[in-house]
Length: 209
Ligand code: URA
Image (cartoon, rainbow, N blue to C red; front, side, top):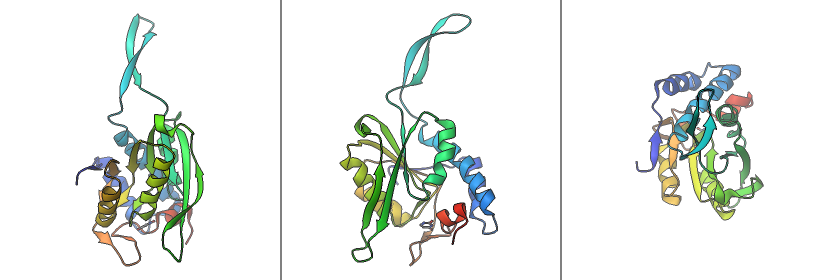
């Protein structure tokens, strides 16, 4: 699929398999999520633009590469998105963090924003939106709408697992936003869960039911 990158690194695939297993404990799930999110972060930032600055090593002066532009923004879709943040911040500690909270209105079934906090200058930054599961894509699409309303123009979406239905809907709604995922599973079930998936990502990382 155009605009979708499956991160097939062996370490990512190995860790994902352990996360999928139903007997994996909350503590192990959380640790693996932190480890895997560092690897996913490496992949989603793989082609960032560089510029050079003049530095002095103990030996001599040189023009050395650094990231170009303003600090990145990692935008977490609450609550499960938070599980990906720590590992990503291990790799990019200076990144800014945004939080987007959405709930589903029972009457209209549309996502409604209940929380939004982000840097003011989204238009000048690369925004990497994180949510472990791209299932129906309703909340991911709404989150992108909200970010674009606030000026974001350069956005990437990073998840752990996706359903083909969610990928298709997301790419139709936001064809300008590249999607990165560790796997695209078989399908969504009638409750909106990814199959075979890993269950409810939020519940598994926080030990709730
Ligand atoms: N959210 C989850 O946590 N799991 C799914 O399978 C789908 C959405």
